[in-house]
Length: 290
Image (tube, helix red, strand yellow):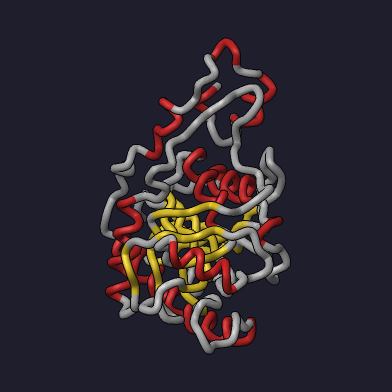
């Protein structure tokens, strides 16, 4: 057993993991409510995994209603050391055909009305998001994807739209003109909460369609997306199997990006001015702030 404990957030199409040993479930209630579903814990190739389906059991939670704060808090409270987020997405580039994977390294967040921070009145913090993912885990994920024979790209910018509707053609063309790579509905504010929770976060965007920018093609079709999604899900499981094989031989060290201590320089409210009730709520995931 190694000292990695990976939180796996499964997106559309990925609702369970195969091959886990010592499987058990855990119900967690966080100060921000309950997560999308109970956590499934187990080991794969000797590496501890904690699986959480982002949209709930049976895909019942739309992107705008996902409890992103409770999900990240639950994974933190379960002892996860790192998070790998897996999501379906549309492609904004010709070369990223359905079935292609992109290891995301940047975001443009156009989501609206979602909670965005564990902090607020009583304790204010501003964490850096210039580089929103963990460089080490992103590289490990990319290498595992290549080894699994998956068409995969290291680096890409993900446009987060609010949804649940898909883009208009004008929107899709606009995002392409910005030089963006893929489009989806769920990685923000998820990545922001992960950073505030001091959890290294890596994201795999699995292309299911070309959005609606290609001339002469129909717009996004859910039936076609679901068909591609099935193949993508099997690829994602192969990737995770290979990744855990790789990690089983390596002892974990802190992220080279300093993510596990990011709050040391992010909290601007001095200790004497921090609201005790607010701190008591934060203690579930930040015991060292007390």
